[in-house]
Image (cartoon, rainbow, N blue to C red; front, side, top):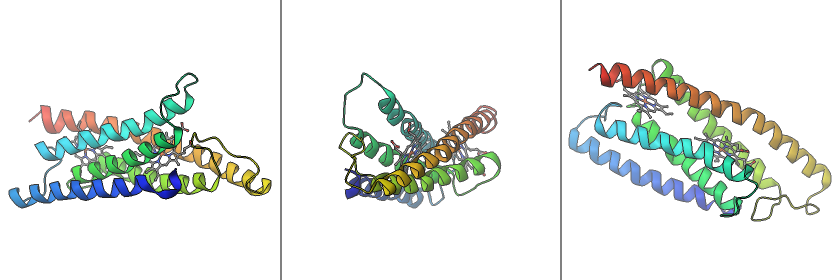
Length: 184
Ligand code: HEM
Ligand code: HEM
């Protein structure tokens, strides 16, 4: 279940390993990897793919009427794991420059991760089965109603931010590939 925070620990350890690899590259090249270099480009692409999977897989599984593979709680754990590791890789891809649209895309990425933590907090306040279904009766009806309202309010903020983030990321990729890669 989400309450143990196992996925947060796995994400943290993975980020430590990635930081180690980043440190080795900085040590060997004696420079911060540029976003368009082999290393910077690769972590940007892998990180972005993880973010894209974060955005789509959990929603697809949640909305699929026929799918029964994997518990919803496990899917949400994957969602959170990829939703942390992907943005972290993208952060290392930026070469610590945040100009223009690419900078705005990074800001949106920060906001969605921060918002994810708030959603995770509210989500874990509602008692659920392993498959994510709410359990009635273990919490006072008033508190349960409030938590549900907060969760639905949270969805109406979190989802549009995700959409804006991916639109701006695709424009950034198109522009960056055109100007910084193909025109060189
Ligand atoms: C959400 C995902 C992404 C974010 C937030 C992001 C953010 C950034 C940032 C902040 C920069 C530095 C801009 C500057 O110089 O001020 C950058 C550069 C760059 N990004 Fe991304 N990026 C993402 C995904 C990608 C992907 C998937 C690709 C490749 C397909 C890519 C290709 C590039 C390239 C080629 C540059 C270098 C541009 C240049 O040298 O002027 N980015 N990105
Ligand atoms: C790239 C980063 C992320 C993206 C693009 C993203 C996107 C989304 C989307 C689109 C949903 C709606 C799913 C649905 O109801 O169909 C969602 C739900 C959720 N996300 Fe994220 N998310 C990201 C990162 C995170 C992180 C880092 C956390 C936690 C720390 C998190 C926690 C949650 C929770 C708790 C839900 C609600 C699950 C539910 O109501 O069934 N997300 N996310």
